[in-house]
Length: 321
Image (cartoon, rainbow, N blue to C red; front, side, top):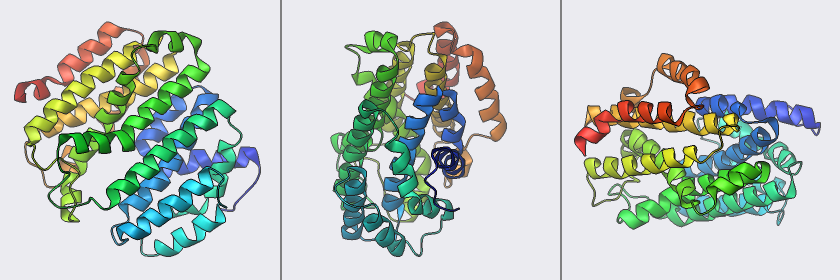
């Protein structure tokens, strides 16, 4: 793909690469209104670049930290974007995911789109990427087979990689919906739980692959059952968060409920499996995802219907806790 400075071409690239690097978010992000879709999609891609550096198994912590800092400098306009892209692609020359490498090569495109967003939205994105990038750098040197030290360290990790995204969404939603600003006041902590619930789902789902490469993001002193219990509590808070989104903001509600529901169903599969050696064993089928996608279209109009879905779909989780 050629690098372009045409705004419509830039946005077309953002939409296309989103579909290549995340099927789930390519499904959920377009549910948002165009102005919010642009900034949330943009943030996801910036966070995905941070993730790609994190996931590069053959890079040592020092190189990861250096690349993360170069990326953050580019986002905050403290350094040129070229000074990040070239060394990053050189360091990742053995990396297998070509779509993620293409995204890194197009970092200038992604940042151009960011700079077309409002100043308030840009400030929210910069804060999110800063906390995530610096947080991941902190954890680069903590990757071990045994796992993270304890529950507080685990929750801190889940905050810097996902809780902060919950905060970002809350800020962006508030920037574009005065009704949401009023309803969320005093309940902002639920946004962190929403992000953490999604991250805990990913950590549990990806644990066999992480284990195979000598890493665990689970707390070393906790059982799977205890982790599922905490995840279930975070899901309860996540649903409370979704209830606070005004019913007239159907796009926001559906975006959040879709991500929430997929997490609920995935964690329930994990609870039923007890042990699994490959994430494919707990992956939701495409038919399940598309059926739930259709269900969200009318479910988000009713808090009672969303509650019923949660009660039924989380029964396997409740049984083990």
